[in-house]
Image (cartoon, rainbow, N blue to C red):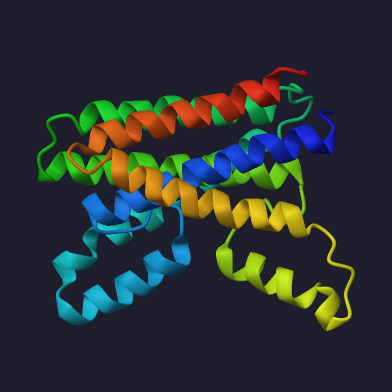
Amino acid sequence: MIEERRWVQALLILTVAMGMLDAISLLHLGTFTGYMTGTVILIGINVSQGASLAAPSLVALVALLLGGVVGGRLVRRRHSPPRLVADIVLGVAALVALAAGLAVEASVSDHMLVVAILGFSMGLQTSATRHAGVADMAMPAATMVLHGLAHDSRLAGGTSHRTWRRAGILFGLLGGAALGAILSRDHIWVGLGAASLVLSAAGFVLRRDR
């Protein structure tokens, strides 16, 4: 197994990619593809305003569930190769690259396919990171990370353990979102392509010690 430090390095890189993808998805596709709390809220808001507006969020939700099913089966394989998590992450990078290619000259229907691919990819990725079993990093949600920083702080009587890791998650999400927004400002495929490269970097970090 990769030592925990290597896991943390790779998963922080993944956090940047997640920030990029959710920012790009929200700005250009009208929904989150990884942050399902936001997606569920958007579905509720959009259903109240018109069913068609909820379609991208519903597609993202169903696609993530399917990705979670496939990812769950992959990580539960008997005698699964030690490179399994890295291979899943690299597979996710390939899927995001495919989405970038589709988005070059995408129609409305193509945009829905892009949402589906990204949602499925995030389901796979979350299965991989859950399988890694690194605290705070299975699905780095800002609310839980912020709460952990406060709850475990010395001010609250805690030991401030994992403070730097949690800070890294927050800055990774923040920086990734800003980077995704900047790179996709003119063309969505540019941002998606960059996110694919970031995911690939995380995958290769994981494979390096396998």
